[in-house]
Length: 237
Image (cartoon, rainbow, N blue to C red; front, side, top):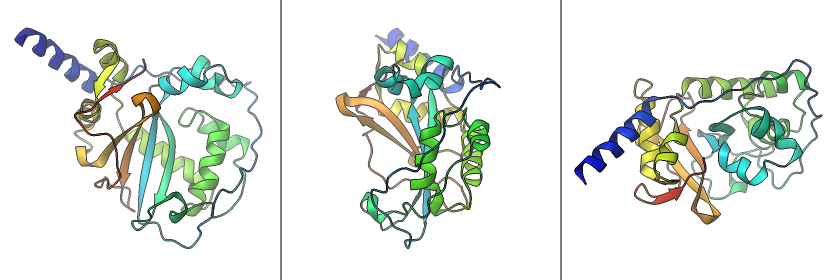
């Protein structure tokens, strides 16, 4: 039993220290789809931005459910991702629901040149458009400003090899182990457990990690609900 626990601990440390095997390239002749304005579910242009949340979604789970969709081919077939940016969300500390947060502040399109430049950070043109319009437009002047900030935040984070961790555990990993892997991989950057929230979707499937930042884009404690550290979650790999 002691030997088993030792190997498990070594596996966790290895996963925390090794960056995920991610590869992404955008062919020069790739024909990007046109962007279209998304519908407005609710709008809030008056509330101030107090902090930010960077959402990193777990690509293997998304691809397990959506890999056969035409607009998922770039993410799920042409490239290989682990944690990938879903969006950067300006937040109000007093917001309780979606419509209490900064949302749909202005409507404009993400141009193709900008989309191409950031497709390896946020691997869907339609996702870029939706996240810019719903969230980014409330705190940034242009889509390029928004996506550029996302790319810098993402580039500053080292991504642990959660696939290996999940594979070694047969797809069952405690939420706290996911947090610990991220913290261990980003110790020098100052990332702490309180800066991270793990979330799951239906079926207790690991879906995303949230990282919280203050207005100066320094790590701050998350006050968002998430999955308890001791809870075992299902991690696609």
